[in-house]
Length: 67
Image 1 (cartoon, rainbow, N blue to C red):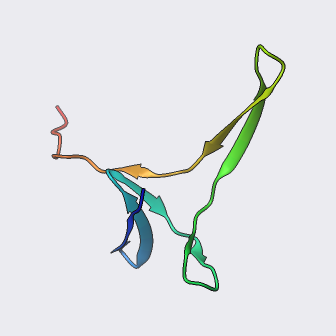
Image 2 (image 1 turned 90 degrees about the vertical axis):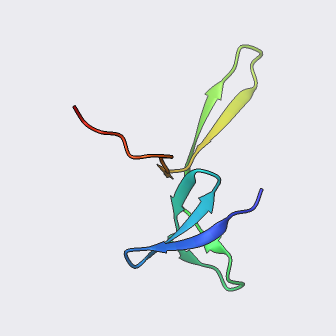
């Protein structure tokens, strides 16, 4: 899956489908660096499951009115 770089209010974001991921900077080859964190949990079979969390914004398809 590939994304595109979009700029909004002076900040760069990586857009993948309907998500915008804030870009922290770029590495020496120009690839975007994003922040993330992981969490490990022991599963029922004794192994480890790892979940990677990436902060992002979800783009809405239309503006919703607040009643």
